[in-house]
Length: 256
Image 1 (cartoon, rainbow, N blue to C red):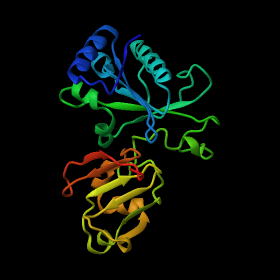
Image 2: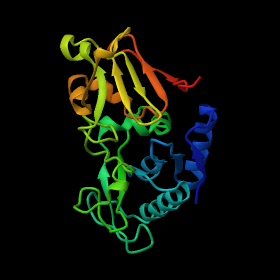
Image 3: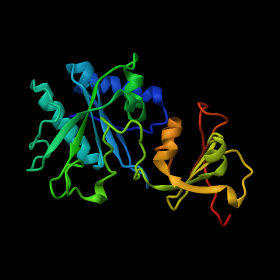
């Protein structure tokens, strides 16, 4: 039905031009962002709001090909006059007896996932819904028995604005005595290749400075650290003060 583009296109202006052409021709554009070792893949529509006055749709954790097919199928439903209902169970979206629901994407989560759409809608304002699929046992993430292996494949964008990380809230992370005792600001975040996190105050530090605490305790005190929720394995982020822009770099291998 329409053309799919990679979110990582190097020429943003050219991508926006092609997006406009595809929306005029097909009614929507599908943007697809591939998975990493840490972050799940996701795809979202652009143009449903402009073409039909309908919220855009985003879906996580499925292949680009499957998301492309599903979003086009939903677009056909909308073109036929159907309005996707919140928290209504749909069984025909996946072309088999598998349930799905749609949740409203909270405005606090829009900046994290809809970059090209926000550039396309120049005023930056448009509604969006998230398609939520069930696991192999046909369970939703909020239902008892949902398979743990899929727990972080589709973040629920109608909630959890105060804690966006894809790990348990009680995950043990390393911070410093200076942050705990003197409330010095976190200026460096490390996400090691083995998955460990370090949230560090200004160096130099000695071994006795490192302390283990729960991740949510850190985020509760400094909500700006939520901005690091998608820092990838093997990356570091630095800032000069709370509220400053983070500078992302790649961690060097220990044996280098």
